[in-house]
Length: 177
Length: 206
Ligand SMILES: [Cu+2]
Image (cartoon, rainbow over all chains, first blue to last red; front, side, top):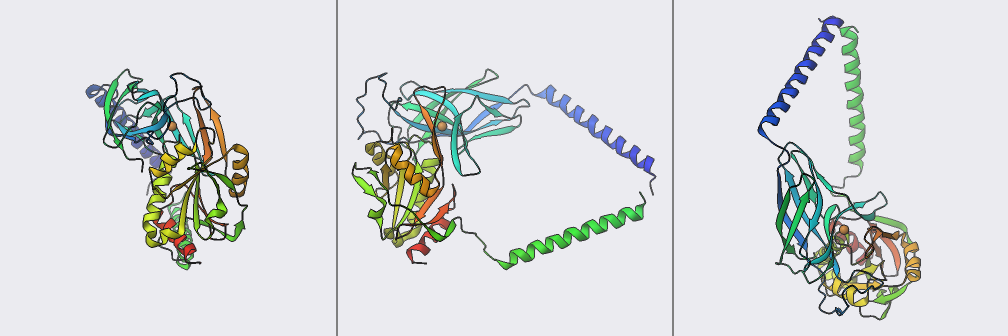
């Protein structure tokens, strides 16, 4: 049977061992990897409402009550980070012939089942982790969309990260449903 | 602390947790429902006022035009890229699950963004999901009355893009019965099969 003091000594020794092992692990990681390492999986864009039946004759830049002349849609994907440092998606862009404005948004559902969509400064991709952009959560919002995006189309999206890295992905357009 | 007292404490703690667990499970046994249904049923049903808005063809449309059918209502806006299409896609699944009973059910998307959601835009939107879906839109005054009956919250939100605004809104779906009474509320992302089951019961007059 252990006395109280011997027991405390044992615990302290164990803690010391764990701490030293953890420090050791960090050193190893620093030696083998450098910063974030990002890949993008399954990028997709939701098809837009067909505009053909709508009057599209609005003058460029004309201010209407609704402001934006085109429709909106969202782009979704998983951004994986196998590196040992976090990174942050800070900007996304598409060709001006696709959409006039691109923003990074987060949708949340509060405790009263109220949906709130808000622009965010960025989306963090944790070290050795993922950021999932999906309906009802983070997404890249395309505003003032300039043409119908139909299932099967591809939208090229450029992603800029806080680390300075830029990735370009081809997102497949999927049906609205 | 003495070892024997320590053991005694541990034993007591284990005993208490076992007892609590037994309590909990006996409670579960009382109501065996393998897959709980997603909707909250209003009992008694809530009497709600009829309302008239503009439909996706530009014509006046009243809730009472759907008397005799079960009506599934969702409030949203077409510039919503994720929650609204997700829900309408689920409506489509509910309709498919209902099979022949779907004839007795109307699926209605009510815009809380009358300023931007014209009938044309609504038509394109709801019909991208199903040709039978109905789109309704109306001005703020008309919508306010409707919103109060169903406890809908919605609010325009401006942000640093002056050309756009966002609309916070309740993401639940609401079910009105054949007599125009509000009967069920489904939270966002309810299981379509579960929703279909609860709607089927209303169709059957249960
Ligand atoms: Cu958005």
